[in-house]
Amino acid sequence: MNFNEKMFELGNHGSAIRELFEYGNKRRKIVGDENVFDFSIGNPSIPAPLIVNETIQKLLNEKDSVKLHGYTSAPGDIVVRSKIADYLNKTYNANVDKDRIYLTCGAAASLTISLNALLNPGDEVIVFAPFFPEYRVFIEKAGGKVIVVNEADDLTINFTDLNLKLSDKTKAVIIDSPNNPTGAVLKEDVIIKLSKLLKEKEKEYNHEIYLISDEPYREIIYDDIKYPFVTNYYDDSIICYSFSKSLSLPGERIGYIIVSSNMKDSLSLYKAICGSGRALGFVCAPALFQYLVGETIGHTSNINEYKKNRDYLYNALKDLGYTLVYPDGAFYLFMKALESDAEAFSRRALKYDLLLVPSDSFGVKGYVRLAYCVSYDMIKRSIDAFKKLKEDYDNEK
Ligand code: PLP
Image (cartoon, rainbow, N blue to C red; front, side, top):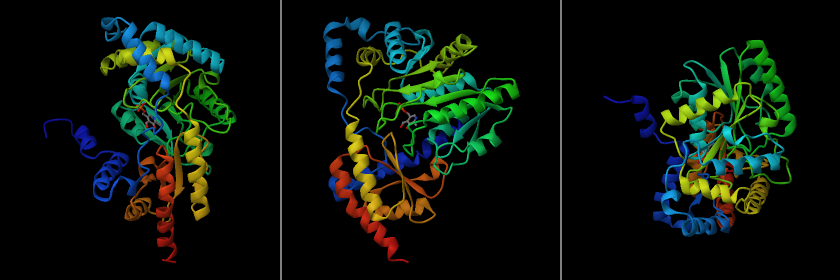
């Protein structure tokens, strides 16, 4: 093979999530759309708010077409960046500087640009199990080594194991809150504890440890939980954001990176982010969508619909006897498999056309992830299939 074997491998074996999603598409053609209960992929099911289409229309009607579709500056239009900074500073009482924002093609690009800006060969990046599987792909491609912190009892942060895994080689730690796949939200006391530990370790090792906060679900939080904005707590932090989920625009590829302006080497790291964006070919995020997010900042799709899904699904599955992690945010439910092998459980669920993602690719064993960003009707129809699946296992006892 006269090309990059690692890239071939990645392309040849899609992610477990995508493979299940493709299986669902085939299955729908055979048994009908209404008989497949596809909980595989985190594709928002709620439409973008009306203001999105109205603003696109307005931009098309009113803005000069050459400018509208032309290149912006490489890190993104300065007026848009100002609007984002103003909004965040007002909402979170933060200290975001427009000249430390880099607009990207979504959170995936935010992460790859940030990791490539930070890492030298052999640097270690800590992730917390369970974690978004693409972290491994992004870290390794940027030359880093993935260090997995074992899951905590509540599936948030296992501080005992984190303490053991932090080392002189640790360059960065990635958090993801609200979390994919558990829906857990890191509350303020956890962020304070994490910041304190990282600051101590920075002193001990005499170098920075960057906290990368991956936040595509920032606004998808239920029950009045207050979101701790990480740059307010830890100076060496970077935020990787995306509008994919909050505005239901995953196909449009728009997001941003924020380098904390409280960081000592903030400008240098920002320049490295710009260099990394350049080297990866990620300059000038889609212009129309840059202007769109500038005009609609602060709006979200109707998050209450996800809450309705969460409440119904969580309660119905609990009533059937399943064990679940109660999700405070995002649109995922993490459920204990009914046998220790989550892949075998996921395969058995296919018998009832239930598409559940086994937890192995998230770095833990024995669970499945259900993406409940689906229609309420599908959730209601699926409960009978979950009942049959449970009975299937109960009958074996
Ligand atoms: N990070 C997490 C935790 C995600 O769940 C996703 C997408 O599902 C991404 C990053 C990538 O987001 P985007 O589609 O904006 O690139």
